[in-house]
Image 1 (cartoon, one colour):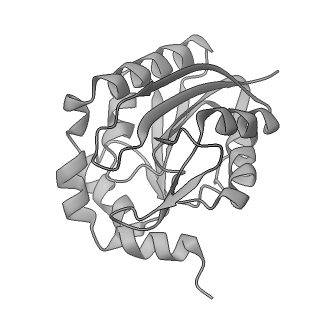
Image 2 (tube, rainbow, N blue to C red):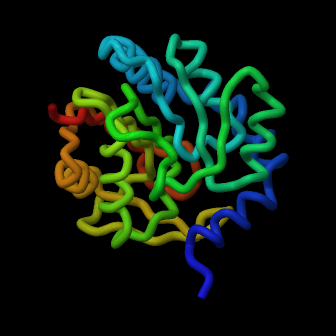
Image 3 (cartoon, one colour):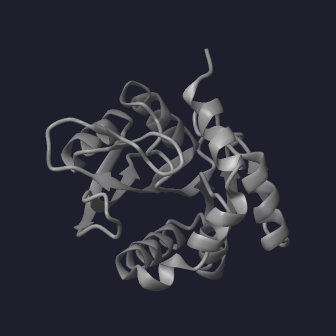
Length: 210
């Protein structure tokens, strides 16, 4: 049986140029996302450890933004085609192929982890282990910024994402899962959808306890 990671990898490998053309400059029209990314970068700098991973980095545009905001940022992605594109687009930055469930990063090494709509394809039963992996690579006091599609209901909702199936999450439930991984949520931003799906766009900032 083909796992969801393999399906997701193949789906994103097949749309690299289209995806990059649609999303590389999209933050120009997303002020809430920009605000949270700026806040994340400022807080990571404040930890004294500017090293940060952009997990599920896609074409690398947010890795480059974090670099421009003063972080020692590098990108990781499941899709080798996305990694190749990111390396071409941002040759001065580091990009590597990796699964979010098994990051090639030593324990407690990072001041920050960004997961910008990159956890949405993970089935609900697998998300706790994935969050634990993000916590593993953070230093005490390190920051995780998770952006995702939010639902008002009590449970995650599976939907037909344009690339490959995805899930929207109740913000409270995601915060509970973060707490289970040792990550304390201290800021949330939910706003009206930027797409026709009708889900809220959500951004959650959490800190690893020390």
